[in-house]
Image (cartoon, rainbow, N blue to C red; front, side):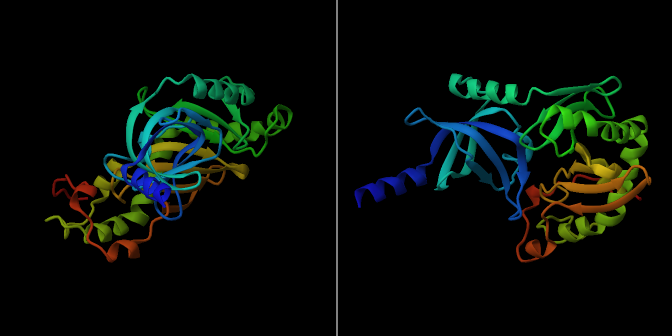
Length: 294
């Protein structure tokens, strides 16, 4: 009985862990919560290493967004133990932590994923064997603006990767050759299909601006490309940070490069009906805009 009480007290107070994030980084799950999977973690209370596929989850907020957790980074976290290998993230206490145990594991991961493919016009890509994709960070519209690029080849060895990667590079080169046009095209399609949804969400806020529509120019200005995935058959998936248009839910746009057409624009794991039942705090919806015409 006393052990159960002590465990309950510990859960309420939270515990501290040093965690190594896996190759997926942070993402939104089907329950609309942010998630990140761990390669391993160290319990700060016992200094014991756990090499297990544990998971952390949290509610997206201004303090804890998807951008706060990056792939292959080591963090000092305050968490609550939900159940075996599942934690609720309370706070990020420190980023880029130095921990010899986790750094050694990270080196092993990097060695296992050391297959690289270089394309002269695009740069170096590293094969991630866990996701079976080639990964790189490339500049987008400016020198300061970088995005994650994934080539989803569905292979985990060098020979098969080299056989298939050519078609993916062709698709990616077409995008980067006209990236300003593609950026504009993707954003324009999104605003045409999703601006009304953003306006409907705003109507449920507590703000004085709740009856003001989300203007198209404002919607476009808020969108920021964070990642681009190249799929088979010249299809791409562009992920945009919504910057609070949809309370932290990413905007996902699918397109076919060869056909030069946009397929769809959706808000990741978002259901407007969930927000009609409650009033959204105005601090979660950024509404600093002038009353401009479209």
